[in-house]
Image (cartoon, rainbow, N blue to C red; front, side, top):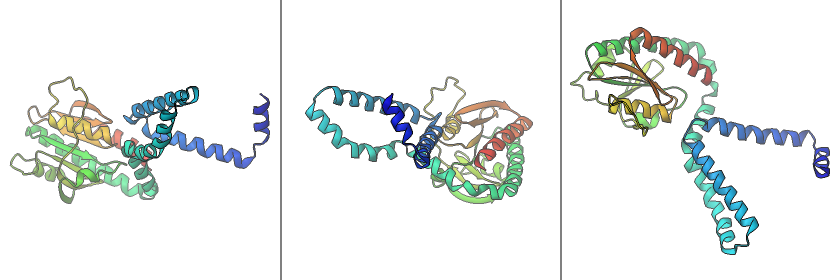
Amino acid sequence: MTNFLYALSRLDWLSLLDILLVASIVYAGLYIIRGTPAVTLLRGLLLVVAVTAVLSSLLRLTAFNWLIRNSLPALLVGIPVIFQPELRRALERLGRAGRWLDRITWQGETQRAIIEIAKGAASLSRQRLGALIVIEQNTGLQQYIDTGVMIDGLLSAELLETIFFKNSALHDMAVIVRGDHIIAAGCMLPLSEQELAERQYGTRHRAAIGVTEQSDAICVVLSEETGTISIARNGRMVRNLDEARLRNILQLFMRADGRRGL
């Protein structure tokens, strides 16, 4: 108790600022990785560190202590590799911090994109054409854009129908939308590793869930067999949508993501 009171008496505004900065960094790190596989990795890492600390302090294990001391540099290098997706997402959010300056333009592009995607999805559904439409949000999707064919064309329902027509060379892969433009088509996406119970989930649906597990993208997917319209976000999927419901859900999702990114 005496030591605590002594330490408390030595606190000044610089010490409080130091503590506040450290606490903010820790909180920001935990906030970034919440709801991601990194949480499990972090829990396992902390368990290993705790067990190692107990063993090294209680037992005089010379070789073990030497191994731990010399492993610390490798661990510091390994942490950025293990948490690379989360670190990349955090840096991308920082890089987009000035996006609030373009709020009016962004809202106009978003509304137009929602209308065209909903209209295009409804038309594709009536024709029983499969489709995979990824809408980029705050997390950049350049690694997937690079696997496809650059288009950078103004988004329209007619262009979506042309890309996903059965005889098109690009109809089996995904298109990626940024703002009110189709940036690329024929893009390959990561497949979800979830245990998907429903047999109706084909490759397109697994890819839609997979890309939304690894980013904050929104993905509209159409079944070629049934014409069913679905939408995926954060690794979850809502199915059996019509044009009006799809438009409403897109507005809800993109408005929420827009507030977070602005």
